[in-house]
Length: 325
Image 1 (cartoon, rainbow, N blue to C red):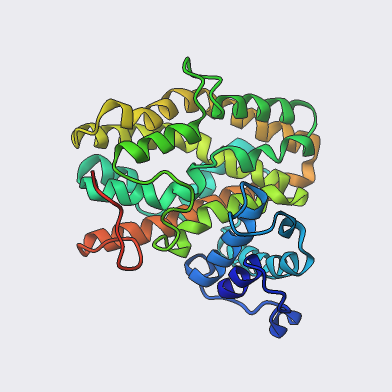
Image 2: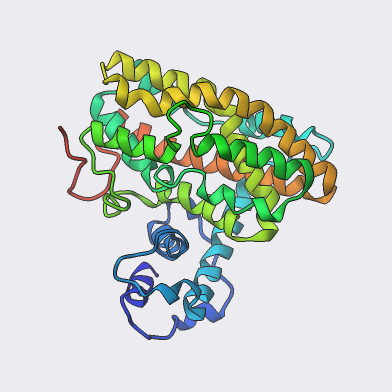
């Protein structure tokens, strides 16, 4: 699938594969499906800065959109099959804790704080770069799809993500690029696409899928709330690990800013979820889906990273590794 999408981006007019006429086959683990996740990533990036060698009008190419829809159905079905059920009467803000605890998983933040090497940190930064280098942009798509208090709360969070909460007014995505450069990594978008596995591309793909579909607007808010309401503790542990490794202060700035900003964003996120459900009660289950999908993707990524590092192996694919300073 990814080869077909790439050919399409480079100018091929070949028809979509014939098997797409049928319903997508069930996948044992869509999050670890490298081909599916790469194909989706190639499609979704057309809606951001695009690809240098792809025509601008491919963003709305009907054949490509049909293939993307087929991939999305498979992706969404796989996620929904693994998200635990939660009580319908649960307070929306409590869903983050309830679903997160039910899904569980190992902690990358604990590993970074206690025993990660600088190479582990560099690999982690590479894994998260497809999303972090455009942090906040997918969630912004929800703004015109909301009303009232939920819209106001989302705008307040997004202003912070784009730098309004910090005296330097630097967007968080730019802080991430600075962190990459100071750690000897290439901050150019997609610089490591050949070594990032599908499980990590799923971080970016999930929020892109939720952001691009109006029907997923409440799930997108659940996704955002999951990160805002679990970020402060994790970011503190990352900062402690970076200090242990004597990473320069400028390279810690991205994580330190999130410790400061996300404490306030945690409160706003809870109010945002309550507001969207109060306005449209039927969206409560969509909020839960967004939270659960975010937690599932994070667990999958953590499992890969920590299992590889436990074995003394790189968590990246292929023969290449992040450059070192």
